[in-house]
Amino acid sequence: MDFTHLAGKTVVVTGGSDGVGKAAVEAFVVAGATVVMIGRNEAKTAAAAHSIMSRTGRRAVTWEIGDLSRQDAVVDVAERLRARLPRIDVLCNNAGAMFLDRQLTADGLERTFALNHLQYFSLTLLLLDRLVPAATAGSPARVICVSSRAHTHARLNLDDLQLTRGYGGWRAYANSKLCNILFTQALARRVDPTKCVVHAMHPGVVSTRFATNNGAVGRVLRRLMDVVSITPAAGADTLVWLADADEARVDSGAYWLKRKRTMPSTAARNSDYAERLWYQSAILSQIDADTRIAAAGVSRT
Image (cartoon, rainbow, N blue to C red; front, side):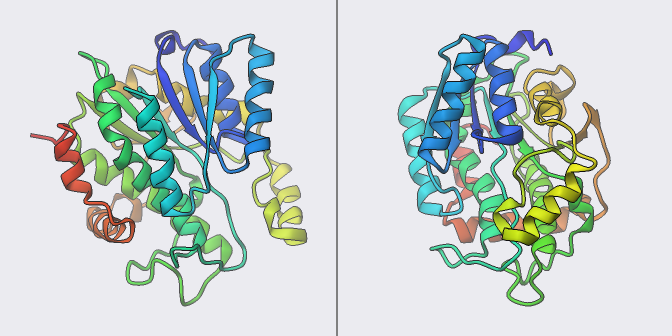
């Protein structure tokens, strides 16, 4: 992969210690970018960073630690990044998981929704004033949200985002991936694309540790997925490409698969869903999202 315009860029990747995230970090480093990895486990994240630096010969990786399923941790990580980085050229919202059993976070939120969607919303809004300074003429900052083809199986009830009724691990995961696309489109409608573009993408079914946190059932599911899985590097390809591609420089709010703009599900194109989710996410995160966009000087005119 040759991503010539990434040299000298600053990239933040959540979920960077394993799988697609780790492969993306390595590709960004090889392309000449400086990368900050966000991970939940200090030892695992540090080991991943050191292995990437050893393989690439570049000391261009640092990391921050936080459990992004918790809103206080998202705020803390964002504050640390803002203190360190005067600008962020690319934000890759990649961290996520599936939980077969319903769990609540310290904020009282269903964990899949909190980790897979709400942290995308919160972290992006909290870092927007660092993304805007990275924009230059003809080259906006970029936010890339890792979604999934699983969004086509979503059954999203906007009156029960926490799935207090009818919880299923697969349903919660599919719903969260639909939320990723709805968030992408709602943000794209609000943000000046000459300053920041936002895209969603499906990496494919990737051979990672995804789902193995769910005990024996999760391990069986993982083995079934591995029958058709691609490598993490292949899964990261479109993610890294979107950070550099001319095709993603002007359009905003698109959904991509294998470097091609792809039509998401009918529900994912529902602007009413996107707006309702936006305002509910703002309430749950306690972030005045539209005010932050205006304060960052990036509102669409």
